[in-house]
Image (tube, rainbow, N blue to C red; front, side, top):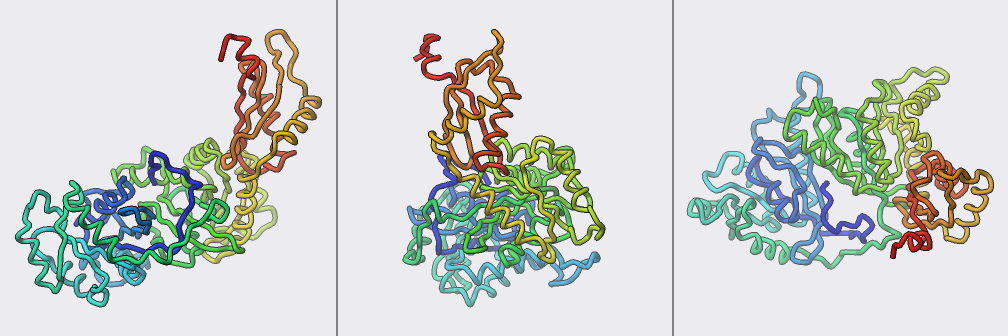
Length: 470
């Protein structure tokens, strides 16, 4: 998910939004229109048919009205029915179509997208499937920029529609007219606003392909929103869902599997991986999904380093634990392995579970709620500096002529991410080891034991003025 200018992850969210679903056969421009209506690039667009697989939903504003916009996979005839392939799994194209049809059931408004030119057999079958939803369907004919093939496009009215919008999703032709029609067709009276205290806890599921991200996402949301397949790279966009646990609301971001750059050969996969990484910006917590049988990789280390730098709560999730041998000390050995590879992240919890059968999921969510509490904890300046006095007595700063510095006072400048600023006489003299000492004290004494803590050293005002600063 791309971070937009001025984006505030803690801004109020909306509940009970009307749902607008974009649907049609592959490669007619659904994702391009989705991005156009969002006014930013959110889903992956590519000439390759079938790029979008899972429904991709995002809350946005159209003509000043909040709504949820959903991009769906293309409806195709060439899928051989809902059959099992040679691996025993349901055919992937059939799963894509199944998800698309399921979204039509939940839609308050359906935008049927067709392409200027001949109406195909897929178009005709899809139009027939939409017949029960005709009263909540708007028809658009895409790729009619500058009036191109507009005369042919009007043939769509012969299929029983009263009106069609001639648009160009790529160039923006007649998009304002379509937006007005969308707003006029929706009921916004049931919308409720979340304040900062009631907003959901946002979780990003990250990790290598086939570690169980989509299986866990579907279990948490009690849905099949994310397609689960043994085929690596099934998830391409960031798939979002919501659930409630112990009266706490959660928002989950299911992401594409992240592989080594040398193994990322497709443009589509490149954008998928980048979206996955950018989802860290939108998350409070990162669940790093690890295949307990296969173990960790260098990519796991890079992902957690990014999450650590951004101050996100991190949980190492050892999935597929039901496949591990039931012998004594198995978890301790796996835990030691994680601690050895992530030496600087000994604070991050480790949870073993099976996303498939659900064992360990409650413990994971309980741990997540605890981490979220730490992320949003604030220490007043008075108690913080009383603690600082004790820390300085226990381990005074060095007193050598070149290494000497004085710690004047400290303040907590932000929560989620948690950041402290220490005002010192000579910031450049503060060693990494002394910074680590202060960070560890903050964790142990002030209730931030399991999350990243950011520290900045600044010269005090008196020291700045003494050097001629303002």
